[in-house]
Structures are given as C-alpha cells and as structure tokens.
Amino acid sequence: MKLSLIVRSFNDEGCIRRTLEMLRRQSREAELIVFDSGSTDGTLEIVRSFKPDRLVNGRAGDYLPGRVVNEAARIASGDVLVFNNSDCVPLDESWLEKLVRPLEESEGTVAAAFANQLPRPDAFALVRKDNERAFGDGSIAAKWKFFFSLASSAIPRKLLLERPFNPEFRYSEDVEWAHRMALEGRKLVYVPEARVEHSHNYTPAQLRTRFYNEGWADAAIFGGETGFFRNFLLPFLAETFRDFAYLARRGEAGTVAAGIRYRYLQRRSLYRGRRDNSKREARVLCR
Image (cartoon, rainbow, N blue to C red):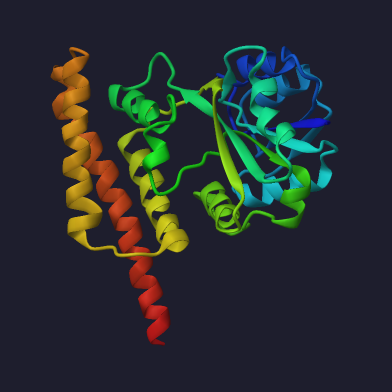
C-alpha cells in the first residue's frame, strides 16, 4: 500500500523543521506533499531543504482547509493519505506504521485513523488537561458523542475522492466530514500508540475566535438545543470542577483563578457560536 504524507503549513518556521525531520525518519516510505498558505517567514526555505515530492504554494488569506484536503486527494499518488500538520511532531520512527495499520488491516470499513496528540512541554496546565482527556488511552473520549481530529490522521484516498470534505467550513471541517462517515456506518479508529507532540497556548483573542467558530460549526453539524443552562452554565461548572481537581492533584492550585478565566472564555465563546448560528438558521427559516 503506497502512502502520501500531506503537510499543511503557514509561518511555522519554529516547528516545521522538527516535524519534517521526523517524517523523513519514518520506517515506512511515503511521498511528501507540502501545502503552504503564503508563509512570509523562513518556512518555505526549510521545506525546500527537505526536497518534498511536491510543494503547492497558496496565497495568504485564501486558505480553506476542506479545499486543501480535496486538492491533496486529487494530486497525491498514495492509496492512503496521511495528514500531519506542520506543528505535529511525530515522537518516534514507527508513528506512520502504527497510524496506517488499521486501514491496512480493515476491509474497507475504516474511514480514518487518527493519532494520539501529546501536549508540548510548555503547554498551559489546562491545555495539558484537555489534551489528556481528549486523547490519552482514549477511554474518556470514547464516551463522548463524537470525536475526531485530522491534525495527524490517515484516510483512504479513494474514499476522499468519493466523499470529499465540505470546502465551505473554515473550522471543524474534519468533524463535519467524519460525522458524515460515521452516519454511513464507517469506523473512525483512534490509535493511541501513534504519538505526536501537538498543542496550542492560545491568547485570549485566539481562544475567543477559535471556540466561537467551533461552536458555530458544531451547531451546523449537529444542530440541537442552544439554551444557556445546558449549553453554557452546566458544562462550564462541570469542567471548572474537573479543572480544580486536576490542578490540585498536581500541586498547581495557585493557577486556579487563571484557569477559571480561561475556561469561562472558552465555554462562553463556544456557547455564543452555537447560539448565533442557531439564530441565523431561525431567521432563514422564517423568511
């Protein structure tokens, strides 16, 4: 089975070298395709030094993730497309082998496999906690309504050509696609032993933008109620309680106040995105 590695980059000179070095050290061979979205730092020079099989240059501001994924499916030669963001650093030489194994061993029932994302050493305390809950051994996320991450994942090329990503989604495009696959009865396999280093310490402005847009996308994908009590207050209180317990166990109780501010901003932004999208849909239906 031939593999194609797809790396998406934008002004990532601080981390992309480590990522590409580890991709080149993998035990499985794969063609390397890099999609850059108009980097203005040293990213392109670093990418070219690794001699990718193909470098696709886009313009800053034109990036839509679904369109890039669909274009990758069109131009890649591999049977399996392995997406790995430029800031996802594989932690060993067998990451690729482990990640694609569920696809190779299935009989076409697996739509995608996705990797375990470990927080960076400098990750904020609650970023570490959220990563551990979402990934780790997979036992917590398995109880959630739905979870998938394209950041480090593998998808059959044939399936992507038949079932492309929605090119209009700017956020949660991977969740929208994976949800459609799940509704068709296809499996999404989490591979905890395929490990990458990946996390983000967002500024307050970045946190607001990220989770507002994820909330908007969630409402578009899943629909459902958007009431204040069930969609903001209860989740905020429950998560804050878990945050306090997590920080106390690790002797970081001094960061609780900052943690409450972080969680409030995150959950409020998520709620507002869901609410605003629902209001928009209601206005459309009333026309």
